[in-house]
Amino acid sequence: MSIAKSGSFNFAGQSPTRLSSTGSSDAGSDAALSLPISASDVLEARYTGKAALRDEMLHGNPVLMRTLEALGMVGPFTMTNPWEMTDPQGHSTVNAGGYAAIPFGDRYPPLAEFVSRYASDDRSLGLPQQSASPWRAALETNLIALVSRFLPQHADSKVFFSNSGTEAIEAAIKFVKAARPKARHLINFYGAYHGKTFGSLALTPNPEYQEMFKPLMPNITTLPFGDSSALESAVRKLGAGNIAAVFLEPIQGEAGVIVPPPNFLREVNAICKRHDILIVADEIQTGLGRAGEWFASAAGGLEPDIITLAKPLGGGMAAIGATIAPPKIIARTLGGFGKRHSNTFGGNSFSMAVGLKSLEILVSENLPARSKRLGALGLEALQALQAKYPQTLEAVRGSGLLMALQFRTVIPAKAIPGLGDLVSELSGGLGCRVLYTGGVTANFSLSAKRVIRLTPALTIPDETFDTMISRVAATMERNPTANHMLRHMPLDRLVRLGRVAFGM
Ligand SMILES: Cc1ncc(COP(=O)(O)O)c(C=O)c1O
Image 1 (tube, rainbow, N blue to C red):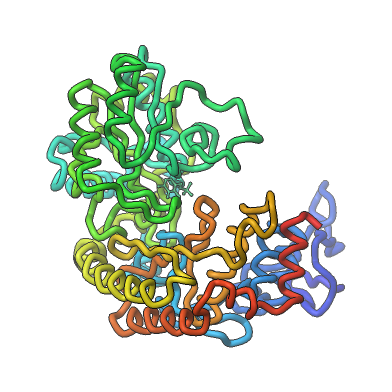
Image 2 (cartoon, helix red, strand yellow; image 1 turned 135 degrees about the horizontal axis):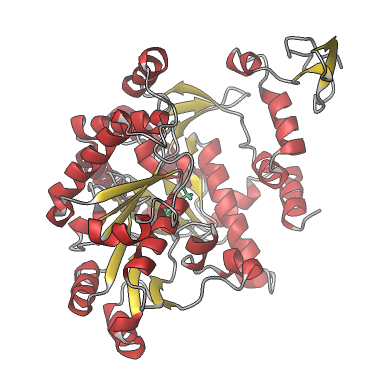
């Protein structure tokens, strides 16, 4: 393998894992180094396909890569247009993946052009931690204007920025604990997904995620989602004064798009307000239009004290978490010159600029309304498919452009005693694969293994949306029972998948 001084190299060769010396030396230092892969190599697509996959296997997450490779959907992909993508073999799919974090599709021109202008014209500091920042101030102001339009009590609220959904939840945990120091308990719901860092993991009651890391944050009471009488009982049992907050998603996303019964959010609201218990609405997946409303919590009758946002705020280009809370709640944690909570990158200018433009696009194109309209059409079509192919689709659900297909197991779970979970995982994986081979990229969920979510961009053109739905229909036609998905899976792929599953 030769590595030139510029950093470019012969990709047909071995993996370029080591730094090489150019032989030249700087005064007093070792020989100057050159890295195996230059940024231009990637930008100019000299480094793609096989080389990238090989290096991800070596230095990235090999389990994920092997799984995706066995399923025949490992990419790397290139965008055809904002809403469609192509794999290295030329197979094209509608992109309904991205875990609800791609609100406009890839590199949506209004956002991409703005980012180019930002890169060439902006003169602000990239990381204005020790100063005011026009980008951050503008996004704070616009977010509060938007939130308070639906929840007027947030008119003087503040925004704490971080870099992911889980961090937005971590901040919320600290805010409620500081605001209610004597109340040790938090309430969450079965099926909830709030993230995987240590605090949010404790609020994500999935044994597969939690077990290895116990003991987690204590004093969390988990209740059935959708049953407000369970909350009444828990308040009686624990004592209202001992409960700092209830954390909930207005619609549970990772659990498989679980929409609660119509009065649930309103009833939770009434109970919490009556007992002075704080409400944290996790709108990281549902918020800003994905579920067909600006805020699914407010639309459902919840008046949250704290709102967490993330995914779509970054426009599919930047990583932003936001925790919104009134001054009296936020003050206790953020007092003390940031000693009690801070981060380095939250509020950085690039993310704030992308967030500001993303929010502007969501508003100017009225994307929540579009999500609601297309989502209703989509759900109707999916319900018809479920009625026609009940041996493949056990259920379908949806709210806006957050849609779920729940597959049946590809073989009866009891056929392999003790491995029911694996059968579910296989069924969901194959569901994802048949959709992909049929021309639709969708989201697998580790929390609800037989549920595959469709989360296309809120800007998806009507024709592309129709194409997506007709491809789902054609996929069901080819797989009139779930077992067909297994029969269509080449044996060698199945063996590879099995090897990953059993850690071989
Ligand atoms: C409702 C909800 N909360 C929190 C998170 C965690 O966000 P992140 O993956 O950015 O940490 C997610 C991610 O899927 C989510 O859906």
